[in-house]
Image (cartoon, rainbow, N blue to C red; front, side, top):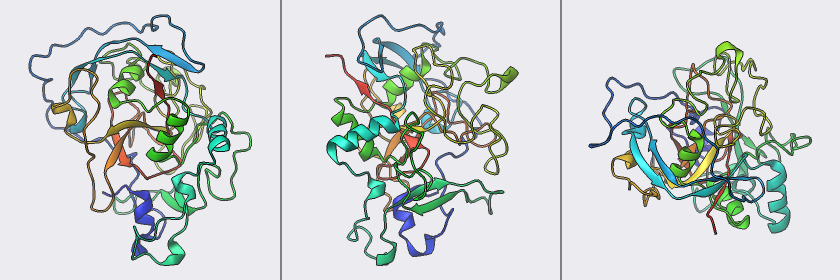
Length: 353
């Protein structure tokens, strides 16, 4: 199943809408549940707690050093086994990076995102010149699957962070929405400019859990929509035909519109995918260090020519219980570093100086 938005758009026989699978894909069903790493014992789940008081940079929260159970024993194989991880303390953004923040970065640096650039002809020697145009992937509702193939992405020339729904769309009135159509390279460039960095996958999950170790959701055990409670911007209705908006939003939402987790972080589940620092390897948890795991040295390439993948976390407004539940804290996802879409953004972290 291919995921690489940029390279596929340039292949002649794939130059049509909806030929590539979204990373909002169903979790892999499992027939058995492996145990945690040898010697591991179930941890007691603490109550959500506020991080120790420390002066944080504006818009950030201090996450104290500690230990937690990372991954799961009953999810897809790449979440297994659940294992204990110790981390140093760090600061993390309360919110996903917004259009207003990214606008300041671009104004200061004249940076152009990957989606704004014409693809390199040397990288795609067989692509017709008229198809070497800047583009990104935009979600479009559609009636149903076609022979099991996702058909809900349109590879749209002129779609980018300034034009999230296509070339005729704008950011008017959307300063507080998360910036989207962001590749890993774009997120890393912003973080460096801001004096920050992208979170490691372990840091992201530790912060996302908000002190609720081993719980299924970032907010505890209550499912989305139970008793009319909504904790994250996700997809309601039959995916991909129509988002009914029972949570208050059809599509992306401004940041901070849903309850924060135990550490005071907003939209850590749903809304937009968030890039992490790590390269992605499906079996990394079976050999990762127990302290401050940095991620593997190289990334997994899902299909020849797509390039190695980086980790994304948190799910998006396209996640829903009938199709994709990857808004859970333990859930992992990946995409090539130069892929972009209108459901992908990021947040940053900073080390204590």
